[in-house]
Length: 587
Picture 1 (cartoon, rainbow, N blue to C red):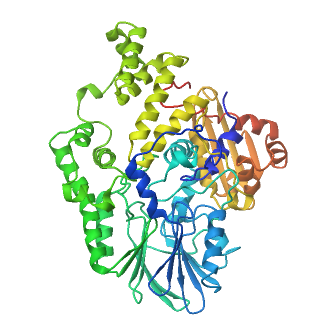
Picture 2 (picture 1 turned 120 degrees about the vertical axis):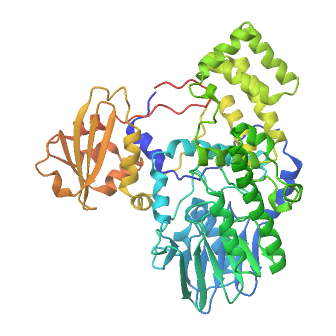
Picture 3 (picture 1 turned 180 degrees about the vertical axis):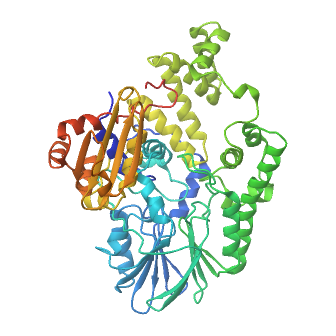
């Protein structure tokens, strides 16, 4: 069944990198085993407050990320605020055991939601400066943009949102992502922004903020010159970096990343406090670790480009390029978050695009055509299934996984193939050292077994909804237009928002929604099929499923048109139900 517009747009509010954890319902009494090194890695997330120098405190193990308190003469600075109000409240309670001074400022190191959603706990109602890079607010706004649904699904799998504690083990850079069905969010938009650097003093603490793009384009680090403490955000943590994340991301420039680490090295810090995992102490040790870390990133970049210039495909690059032994064996470069192979594939697509240079891939067989070809080569569908079962029996789990996908694509009701796929996924997950890959395998196994698609279902409160810009709602509206339902449509709708002094014109024209922002007065005299005067806050809340759509639409003013016509117009925007990647997708 197609989801209506209210349900589909509501999903865009559930935040990009957030996922809820199934605390009680998981994969059964006896969950899959975990790689020994991944189990041992859990020790670095020992829960507690770690003191750094004289006046800096890092809260570790309370959620996916760290929150850091800097104690000044008459107040506190909080750097990063956790992924939910519940996580932030526990951290604040621990900080209050150290100091009861008021919070004077908050600093966001970047836009990822595990660093920003608990801000209101530290500064109820706002009222303190919120420091961030000038692009951070816009990147947070992208949370409600066109990629919302697919990033939601892939994040659920990557962070192990539906796994129980035993199956989860850890998330590589934190024990778990602390965001659930009952979680609340308390994001506060930045109020003090900058481009390259900003120097300021709060509560007697002098600090410098430096733009250092890496894991995100808005990444910054915080330098405390008198304390010799550097807070590096997510440009370093105790794992091979996520130069590419399997939940999906725009290209992360490896060159920018290692050059940003060089800017950190140039400060010669005595203390290095990452946004995940534990601090490092000692200038020589920090220099040695960061040197290896940036060398690993540059090695991947340079060798990928070298191989590309030889004409190698991304598959060949991922197979042949390995880190030098001294880097591959370094304790801070183990594949607990990113991997070399994923990173190399990202460099290829980021620098050269999708085409790998093989003519066979210019117009490849569709997945269904490829499945039918394999059946023909095997002799029959039954013979292909026998080969798939034999691969599973032989411990060739990747082969069994790939072949099972072809069988299910041809016959979605093939329960034997689904069973083979579940067993292959669990076996691959048990052997996987990287927690992101482990979670993805195990979550898909749960999805097949229990018949669901991993999507978050948390709802924000009205105040949080109002903080997201209208632009993101309309961007998602455009890409959710149903091409079949709108194939013969030619309608122009104008919406003015009295509480935001802005307006939008939506022209649905035979499968395309042209949406333009304009001045409210420009709607006067325009040839419109429906004219709507709405309250932006109410409109957003309706799309977020926290306001009744019937009463909301009835409360708007229409000239021309009416609420029924507008509801029918909105019904044109209805995306297909999300499916697992191997299943045939209906329009």
